[in-house]
Image 1 (cartoon, rainbow, N blue to C red):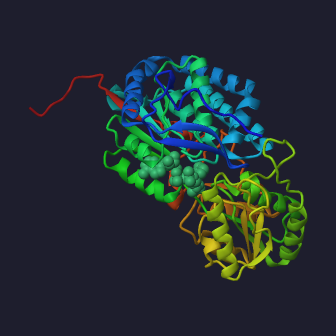
Image 2 (image 1 turned 90 degrees about the vertical axis):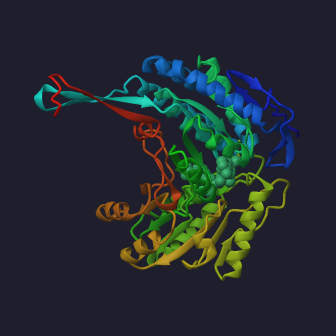
Image 3 (image 1 turned 180 degrees about the horizontal axis):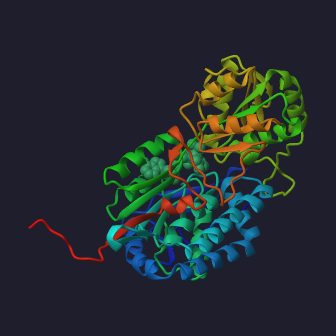
Length: 486
Ligand code: NAD
């Protein structure tokens, strides 16, 4: 079966689709078949210029609207997204290969949540009144930064675009967004929907392309802030480029997160957490708990139950709602994952299940579990970004905590235990931005989200995101005369 996902044009600038066929061709591949489903063009320098100029021109009038008015438009966009959830989810599935069973509940819907949440906050954004000596006082104004750039990864294209655009726009910024070159389709739909909801032209623009287009946006002097979701090496480059002009940044980067399963944990819940934290989206989730530390007393029972539960994985056509395990996003990502599996075997980890490319078209890798993994193995240290779970044994809480934190990353962490004091002690001890107790990978928009250490800076979601898309201005007001020395 062939699928046609060809958009009207490659880019969305100043409230309308835009094209420049002079830009290098970008093939969009359906990962479940390897078929080309659309052809786009990278943005030429002229288009990047148009997008930035349009954002710069549109931003002041957008900022001058009241928060109530801006919020109303964002909330209207959320409603439209929900009405079109099925069509948007099908497009996301074609773009990413993620099963429709997932995209129907986790992608456009999550984007709609962000637009609704920040749309709701927009009217409530106020400053502070600060009383001072002699009747003087000061007040603060929360002001937009100006033009913000958003750059996305390929695993959650709609969600990433909405998590960045919603708080940015709520505060009164304009945005130029560059999706991942691997998954360029759904962000165009977002731009279309925002425009239909009443967003003025130029406030949200989409330009396509790879790293070069991203770099051109980041270094443009008109840009006040850059928010990137991507890998650590890209984050280092983008952060450094932004620093040259003291631009604000949010960096949502990679991870190698730990999940601790204590002897007293509810076994099925812990296994469910490990499955969600390693195999949802075929393992292509930044927060995944890929280092599963299992206390020795529960280890065999954990592995046995995990093997049983993995037999429930249904690999197949992602557009079939019965499928719950899809392909890797691309052939390149599949090969990266298979190389890591080979490395694990070579280093002496015990392959419990999986480890092969599936015998079917597309870029499928079987759900893979390694046991008896040692901390210094490459598969336990590097982010794989695929369906590969490493199970490591431990004896004491103290030992597990030290090993869990012995990583350059600090995105997320989880703990499964019935001991309430231990649960909170462990959560407090984790060097990570987002932690779960007896759960894994929940990311509701109400809760701040982001990493520590090499996993990033800044926060998305929650009230915290507002601070990362605005600047605080303090205004001092003298009520008496000014006393100067001469
Ligand atoms: P990537 O770093 O290769 O690319 C991310 C984006 O940056 C792409 O749009 C790419 O075109 C762009 N880019 C590349 N070089 C650039 C440059 N020099 N200047 C500006 N932009 C540039 O990442 P990926 O392979 O698309 O995504 C996978 C990575 O993203 C994983 O490491 C994963 O952990 C991470 N991720 C993090 C989060 C999070 O919220 N923390 C969420 C999803 C994915």
